[in-house]
Length: 217
Image (tube, rainbow, N blue to C red; front, side):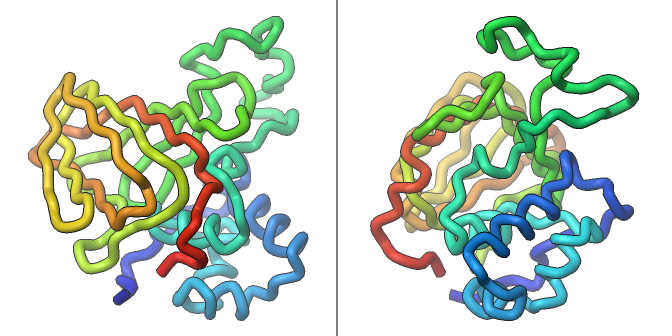
C-alpha cells in the first residue's frame, strides 16, 4: 500500500488538543518502542513521529490510526481524562455530577490534520465502544485516495449536515443529512467531504481493538 506524504499539518507548538503528542509518546515508551522503529513499522519518517510527539504537527486520521494499530490503542486513548487547567478552569470543576451527562461545551476533543475533529460524547472512556461527534471541514479526508484505512471494530455513522463520501472496498457512497451507514472497519475504507459545506456526523465504533488482520498496511 502506498502511503501519501500528506500525513500531518504544521501547527504552533502546544496547539494540539489536550497534549495528544505527549500521550502518544508515553504510550510508545511504555511498550519500549523507539521513534525510529515505530516510524519504520507504519511507513513514515522518524522526523514525523518526533514532530507529532513534540506538538509541532497534528497527525492526520490515517497517521493516527496507523500509530494506534501499532501501539494497540483505542480511539478513547487519544482523549485526555486527567485533570488539567484550560482558560483558568479545571475540567474537574466543570464535571457533571455522577458522570452521566456530557455537556457540549466541555466535550473532550482531538483536532487532526486536514480539518478533521473528533469530539467524545461520553463523560468518560467506555470499554469496547467509542461514541463521537465528528466534523470534516470542506476539502478534508480521512486518507488520500491511494491509501485506504483499515482497523479493528465495526463502525456506525449518521450524517447530521453536509455530504459525506464513503468508500468501502471497491464501492463508493454519498451520504446526505439523515443518511446512515454501518461497515466492518477491517474493510479498506475512506471518508471525505463532498461540496462546499462541512460534514458533521454522529459516529459509533464498536470493539475498536478487535483487529484480526494482524498489522495494518
